[in-house]
Amino acid sequence: MAIRSKDWASIRNRTNRPAEKARFSIPCRTGVLVAVFCSAALCCLLGQESPGGTQKAKQANEKTTEIGRQTFESTCASCHGLDGKGGERGPDIATRPEVVRLTDQQILKILRTGIPQAGMPSFVALGSATLLSTMNHLRFLQGKRAGPALPGNPETGKELFAGKAGCSGCHMVRGVGGFLGPDLTTYGAGRSVDEVRGAILNPEKRRGLHKGLATATTTDGQTISGLVRNEDNFSVQLQSADGTFHFLTKSALAGLTFAPKPLMPGDYDTKLSATEMNHLVSYLLDAAHSQDQHAHASARKKAMEEE
Image 1 (spheres, rainbow, N blue to C red):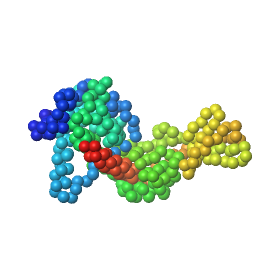
Image 2 (image 1 turned 30 degrees about the vertical axis):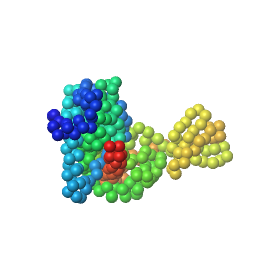
Image 3 (image 1 turned 90 degrees about the vertical axis):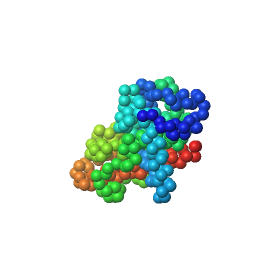
Image 4 (image 1 turned 90 degrees about the horizontal axis):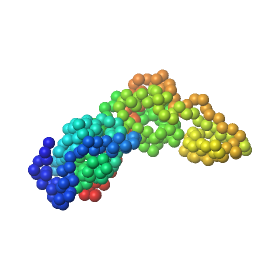
């Protein structure tokens, strides 16, 4: 889809140097974003701020949304398709998990710098506001801006997380909880209800969660329990439940034993009802979406300041 004349005039005013015009017109080549999106790590969802209550703010938001759609269709769709699910020359950037989990800042950096060695030009000449709008349209195609469909009540799930389910003893969400397990604030980013539920019900499939607590006994009779974070032939590092790290030399230990029971319980299918499980899953998905909204607001503010 070609850029409309009035939109091209706007972009032309931003990019009055011939080199920048040429760079903007370069189409995506084969594998334009493959190296970028496939090399990014896991890990999170970034929400869209609500439009202002005034008619002027609403119109401004609609204009920004339209600019993002037009820019994506004229600049990105030739490689990745109008729906972002891939084309003849570019990969799927709408549904692939490793792409969906990229943060807004990571995507904006890709758009600004490009990947010259892979044939992807920089689109920094479009300006921060246009790049932000384009990224927002990609998020719309990924289904992230609207928020995930929840099978239960997040508030009830929060209570279960800290209570009956016992998750907060090891895991943290939004700065509250334990230290031994991974921080789950953004765990639900880009994950479906079934994925999150499966990770809870089948922890043996998740790396590292089969480990049990270790108990170190020093030669002077002191005992320290925690999760082994590092170990070599001469020393061991334990992290206790309160988050404290203990560096111990093995020569000063009388013994080091491991609990046979893993940290991550494997009985949630009987510990929680199906309804309670839905509430817990909803809490994790909602936490990630809320974090996403906050991060997006920060990215938008930064982009506006750079404009």
